[in-house]
Length: 408
Image 1: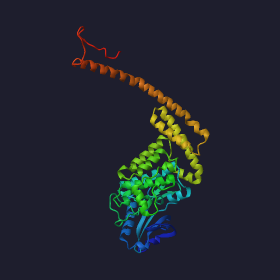
Image 2: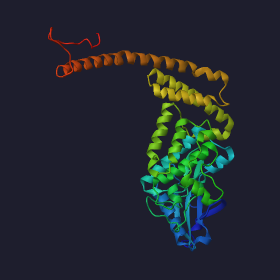
Image 3: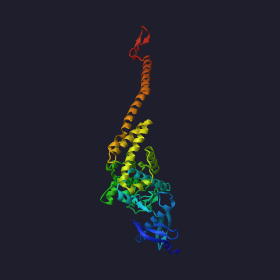
Image 4: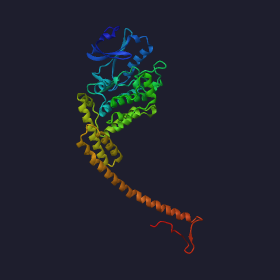
């Protein structure tokens, strides 16, 4: 290959996308006989030092990361002073395209996507790299449903000052964090906020912060509390709605970290006996409405079953939460009248067991404690009266009058 023309190795087939800093092409690597994604900086940015720095940092950031949920880089260089980088080509679509085609996504599809994104972010954050532009267009899905985070073009080191010019920010206005909106140093918590916006968008089909201008959007991100996501989509699982709300906290310290999010997802899915297989995305794309109905029925049945097991193991609070979740799911068009009464025996059985447990607890603990308390007070009263000027002494019998004490 001609060292002065390194792009001769790659045969460009077609343009895939155009961003603010570069264009991405589908190309064939002639040397290794494989398809790749070729990203080339826009010619009109070549005089911008900051743009070249960001492009170079993206290449180094991706090269420093090795994870199944982060796109891989194969090559980096310049062709006629024009920087380019070569990455793996993902044969599929991005998350924005999925949302455009199917609208709001079901619970388990969204949870599965979130889990993969979080795994990739944990890897990046552990290396001190903050993505700073998590949005649906930068989340790629291959045909097997596996996620790849891409476009680290505005990534930075944790707590590093922005490469943006003073008074400006870099990123998609709808998905930036309050820290980015106010041009403050960012940490991994900034990516978590962007993830919260993305999940809100996936589950409701609407953005949590809106405005007619970029500045009004920024003001909403800084000041406004988003509407409860369950008002927009009542089928969103309670714990998932709570998790999204926590991710959208204005204060970075109040947001959960990536590891905590991962633990919450795994604990909740394990507790309700739910699977997050990547193939769910594939099945959803084949027949979205059929999948939606099947998933609601699955969740409804699994939460009933899990609640029943919790009741049998006397995990009453957990069982009640799951019955409440099942009750909310049944108020959808996907649950038939025949299916709706299935969890009634669980509720009645749970209430009966709850009452029985309460009676047993009262009998074995409350009554003895009450008796000991009375005896204790009596002993104290008798002892006190021996030394009190107000105590009554029966001089005839030489004993303290205990007529005021309760009968035993």
